[in-house]
Image 1 (cartoon, one colour):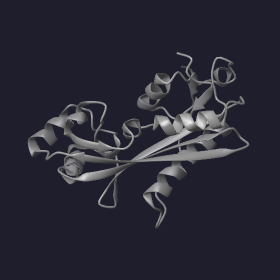
Image 2 (image 1 turned 60 degrees about the horizontal axis):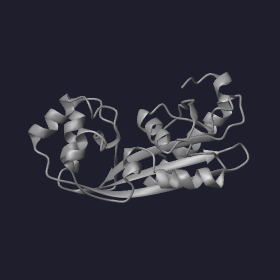
Image 3 (image 1 turned 90 degrees about the horizontal axis):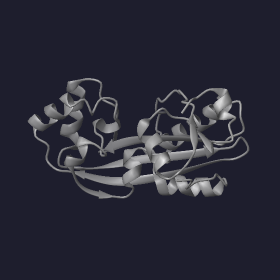
Image 4 (image 1 turned 135 degrees about the horizontal axis):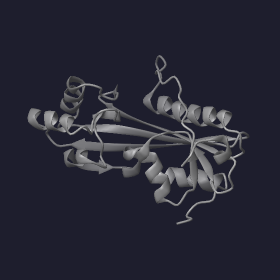
Length: 203
């Protein structure tokens, strides 16, 4: 899917996805949405005293707004963001074995929260929906933590794991939106698509 301005103007698309995430791309494709990718880079630093829910919602909306400002067409733009929170602390995206190991040891044998926000804007109105999911991990050994890092999967993933991949073996229980943990809460997304009269389910 090209991201050129001419592609954005195409009538073959329903919306713009302001994200380069392959997981969000796959989830939108899963529900039959026709889209073009126009990634939006923003300042993702958390504000002082900003709650996780407010933080992730703000980022999703900002991505949608920035994406809308960068396109030449009139398509609505969808932005999304996902964070992992354990014991009140937001866990980032590990870039080293040490960071990955530390994150998994924090998550090991505990229940953490995944906040996943999706936003849609058409230049006239904007709305945000939020999914909050409880994920419980089994005890993760030091050996498994190291093996997981060397699989290559944790790098760049929020919270240091991918539930749709090898990381699924750590999950003992999940209460909430599975797709939200992957990166895009589909029920909330579909609600926004209906609100904005965006075509879907093309198959």
